[in-house]
Amino acid sequence: MGVVVKIKRPYPVDLEGYKKRVFSTIRRYRLVEMGDVVYVAVSGGKDSCASLALLKEYVEQYRIDAQIKAIHINLGFKTSDAVEKIVRDLAEKLGVELHVVRARDYLDIEAAAKATGRPICSICGAVKRYLLNKVPRELGATKVATGHHAYDFLANYFKNLAGGHHEWNFKILPRVDGVGKFLTRIRPLIFARPEENEEFCRSAGLPFSEVCCEYGLCGAANGAVHEMVQAARKRDPDFDIKLLRGVVDFNLKHGAAVENLRYCKICGEPTSGEVCAVCKLRAKLSTSSLLISSRPL
Image 1 (spheres, rainbow, N blue to C red):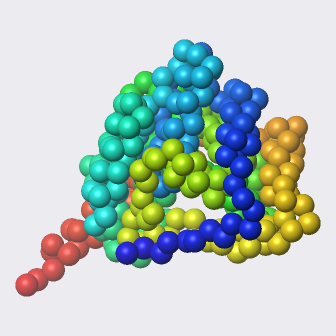
Image 2: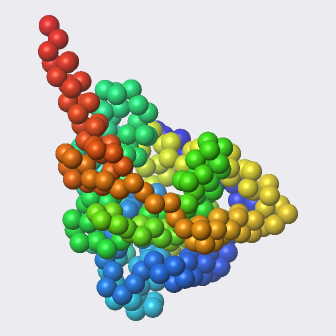
C-alpha cells in the first residue's frame, strides 16, 4: 500500500467558514459562468471529491446555467480499479455524470517508468496533464477543475523560489485562462486547507480513498511546508491563507507568465516543444520493447 500522509489538526475545522471561502473564490474569480461545461478531475481522494461536490452545490444553490461533470483516470495500477469503484459511488451519490479514461489506452505508465528510468510519479503527472486537457476538450468542456488545495500551491511556491524558477509561480492562480487547445483550468480549493476538505467529505458522507495508488506519493512532499506554515499559524491562525492570497493578488496585478505554446507534430496536442511529453514517452517505450523483443533467446 502507499503512504498515507496524516494531517495534524492544531485548529478546529469551521465547515461553515470553509464553504463560504470556497464559494467566495468561485464567485470572485468567475470560476463557473453561465453556459459552462466543467469537467472536474476526480482522483478519488478527499480533495478532488470535495471539489466536485462543492462545485455542484454552488451551481445548484445559485442557479447557474452550467453543467458540472466528473472525469476519472484509471491509472492502470493494482489499486486503480478499487479507486474507480469509489469514484463511481461518489458520482452516483452526487448525481453527476462520470467519464472514465483508462491511461493504458494512451500509455502504460509503469512500463514507461521502467523503460526510461524516470520516477513513476513524473510519468504519471505528464500523462494526467495530457489526458485532463485532451479528453475533456473533446467531450465539449469549457473548463477543467482540479482539487489542488492551499498547501499544494504553497509547496510549489517555496519549491520554485528555492529552485530559481520564479516565473513558474505566476501560474499560482484560481483560474488560468485557456489559449488555443488549452482548456481554462480552475482551482476552487486554492484557499482551502486539506484538513477542511477531509472534514467536509466526512461530514457529507462522501466516499473517498485514503490512498489513490499504491505508490502513494502524491502530496507527500508537502509535509515540510505544512509544518513550517503551521508554526507561523501559532502567531496568526490565518497566516497560510493570507500568504496565498498575497501571492495570487501579486500574480493578478503583474500578469501570469505566458507559455510558449506549440502543438505536437505527432498528436497535435499543446506542448512547449516540437513533440509532447506523452508522445516522447510512447516513442521510448516502443524502442525499449523492440530492443527486448529482438534479444536472442
